Image (cartoon, rainbow, N blue to C red; front, side):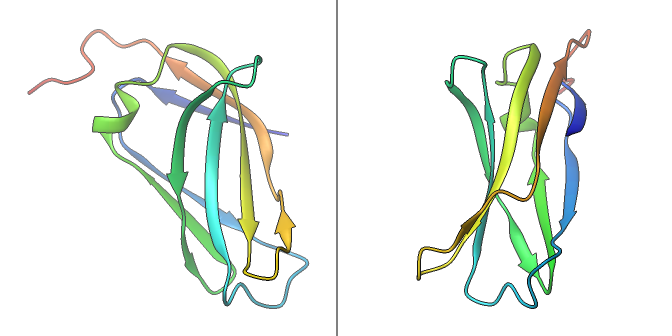
Length: 102
């Protein structure tokens, strides 16, 4: 399991390297953040380049995420309904004094 810590309102980039497949051609990728009750807190579409997926979190999105420890998982899939969950873990949204200084 992986743990991600992010300050509420901060921007960040996460990368994921996929193993066990020779190519991600034709695949799509998403990262889902959700509560223990299964309520989705946020989703992020990944950009695929070779066997690396990049998830770009913008502060406009992260400042709306509720504080606390959540779960996350990444999903990759293709048109033939091959679905994989390469990474799971916890996603901690931490408090800040100001989450949008503008």
